[in-house]
Amino acid sequence: MSSIITESSPNLSLLENGGGESDKPTTEMSRRVQRTLSASSLIRKRSDLKLISRVRWEFLRRILTNLQEVVLGTKLFILFPAVPLAVVAHRYDCPRAWVFALSLLGLTPLAERISFLTEQIAFHTGPTVGGLMNATCGNATEMIIAILAVGQRKMRIVKLSLLGSILSNLLFVLGTSLFLGGISNLRKHQSFDSRQGNMNCMLLYLALLCQTLPMIMRFTMEAEEYDGSDVVMLSRASSFVMLIAYLAFLIFHLFSSHLSPPPPLPQREEEEDVYDDDVSDKEEEGAVIGMWSAIFWLIIMTLLVALLSEYLVSTIQDAADSWGLSVGFIGIILLPIVGNAAEHAGAVIFAFRNKLDITLGIALGSATQIALFVVPVTVLVAWIMGIDMDLNFNLLETTCLALSIIVTSLILQDGTSNYMKGLVLLLCYVVIAACFFVSNSPSTETDTAKANHTIAKR
Image 1 (cartoon, rainbow, N blue to C red):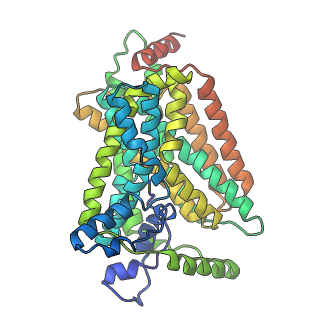
Image 2: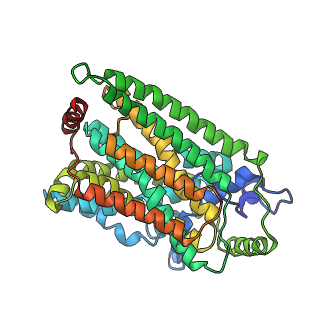
């Protein structure tokens, strides 16, 4: 996932003005959107096109160049063989746990390549369209998995995977980044714009309210009178509210951010920041493939993600039984960590470079996007498909989400960071992982309903 909240980029004036350097300062909107696209570049591998340049035919040379940039242009290309292996394993009825593992590994480079291709399209379309694309495609993998699980009526897996993505970004990604960034910058003062964290936490509290009320409403009703329709209707109404909030969030950051310029930095820190920007200027590259080629490859990668996601959803229960793990642990812990490994690595690398605003943009931006966009869209898509899906994530899961948001907001409120804050977030994630590792949470919606009835009677 690429977040919306980001920093400046040196190439933006070139994109906006069609060439040359612009004396006009880059707007805050352009800065944020353009640096969004840098996280995937950290995972990119420099392409050697010397051999391809010797090909005589230009058409063939373009095809080979695209293959080189899209398939081999990432440090995760070593995981691409997992994609055909997953298809073969599914086709020839190999153990379903192996199909699940290969599908999960194959999704890792595909998710990173979707981010890369979105970046390439944004280079051609400009910052506003690029920001909107990141707002919708940033968590494409999570959305595809959720919608396919809805189609198979595996609501429990839908909720677990979405909740796991939020918790992973809030605690694991952010915690790892703050911890390692604090250790690597012990002699430097790590700070960030606290308004960014406050904005995201405020929206996460809204999402928490929309998910808590259906659960509370469920437990306030008599078990004999409960049929689920009222909770489903409330969940659909809450989904519209969350989408309105997310739309306002997009408008604010894409068009209104110039109204609140970032606070001035201390002289020494400002000099270091300028030096870092100069270094990144040298590393920054423009588009390496054409727009239509990027769109074509984006469609291909999305179809492959959909195929592997279908394998993933259909085999998760078999993998849980084979490995002796609960579906809750796989959905909340394993899926988010492995599926978004490239994005997580980008957040950590930016923390190493003392660029915490970008790190927060990746971690908090992704969590906010899933909570306010992916979750409500999944509920509404289920409604369109004639399937009832509510926002009742059950007591244990909702409590974990609430406490995670509270701890994260408290840690980020003063605009400073150190390794202790990251360690606290990581330890919170470890406790939650241990909770779902030892718990025998219901694996199906029927079992969940029975458990809720039992609690309500008590």
